[in-house]
Length: 237
Image (cartoon, rainbow, N blue to C red; front, top):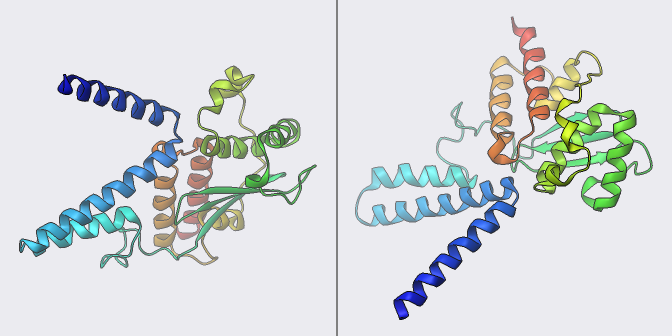
């Protein structure tokens, strides 16, 4: 009887966890998985170190530290992601919205540049205000619409399934505001003017990882990052 009760409890717990993961923001789930995996690897590394397997302990410890975003002995080796500067931010701007992507955390934040909510941070606006802003952008700022959609994907998991008129959202024609300037490209990649080709490629790789669908990524922002890379690399050809 006790075993049956444990089995029922286990099934219920599994069902509850699956429901929670379905409702959770994909970016939050990915961060949780990285955090749990990082601590698990560090714990295993400590166990191996106690048993004398220093080589494996170092390898697993560095992998765990990388998952947790800690500094490792490989932090300055190109390709291991440690060459970036702490606090580095990418910026994408439209007529009404400026969006920022943190290279350290992958968090997306934004500021309203024009309209009724000018000067306000998106994080400070409630759902009704954000819907009003979205409608204003639909009429005057198509690029701002794409930026807000990327922000909504991070903040409101599953919002597309409940949004009115979402059925034709994927058929809207992309509108560009002209050729990207080098200044815009540097801001998008979070680089200073004069950055080398290696710096451009490294920043591009890092940002594309942050914009992966598992991280709550955005195809629009990924396209802008790709365009910025092409603009800056064209100077080095």
